[in-house]
Length: 405
Image 1 (cartoon, rainbow, N blue to C red):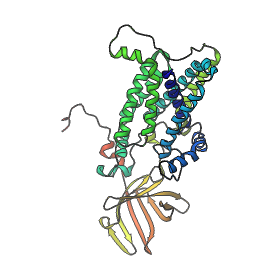
Image 2 (cartoon, rainbow, N blue to C red):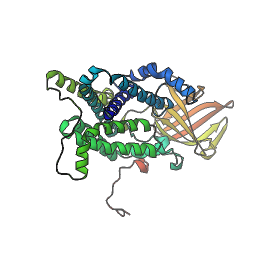
Image 3 (cartoon, rainbow, N blue to C red):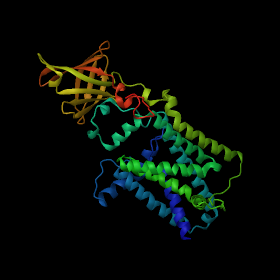
Image 4 (cartoon, rainbow, N blue to C red):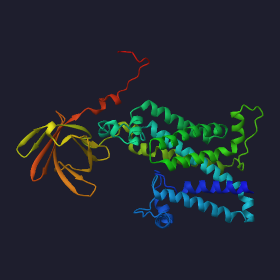
């Protein structure tokens, strides 16, 4: 009885996490507003009155206080649902079928996550090529998560390797005969993901732990076979997976293929819509890149690059402009273009806007920003840097350490 209660709580908790922990799906955007509608006020109340934390925003995002409280609420809710269901006589009749449906739902969800993250790696949508401002930031000044992300983004072959493993695990999970192999492969992958997220302080710790929990939950029915495999036992015991064997009827086939089709649509829809299947070659904003300041004009005075308050400036793919001073400190602004008047509109974090006129000379790759500073007209003249030829982005490979030296 005790084992049955724990199993029901575990199943219910897994299902509730999948339903209510928001994930940035492409097909639907309902998860976040629905979760906030149902749990938002309660999350805010608990945060303030129990944990003495006042939240400005109760919407659930990765590794926020709201997300931790939501997971706690879902666990309590799973216990409550189990307590309500167990005394119900009809529940005993449908418990096995319900458990089988929940198991398959979790199975398909894990396969979706593995396939999505695998495709994102191969198509360079997760570990994309480092931005120019990151490449010109000293390694010691980078946060650990950015350092890891940039290193991963610099190697396309390693992205293909990791992505292929995740896709292979997802495919194995979807088929009954290879399911155990897929779950063991994904277990190794997810243990590594959790270690990376904690080791490099990447803000998807809780979600990666959830995926690992789902993986272990799916493996539990195979625990005897895993034990036999680990200790080379010859008398193979069939798995005791709690499931109802659904008859191979048309509705069953239809649901299976519908689920698989939705997974494929969710994974590949953004790439089909954009027509781009390599994030590193996706279209960048106008004048995207890095610019070395060659001179600075303030009023009637022309100063050398060394005397300029700005050493370099960068235009980021997410529409930011970033200025690096002579002490290698960076300051960023949200960037908008007004192409009719050739003007940059810069917005800081206090929502204050400034306007910079600009001119660009394609022949010399010279970008000039013109603005007023302390009542004086100033000009910042920058020359584009071919940042894609930096050593970290070179496609090099050698078998021996002394080749060509």
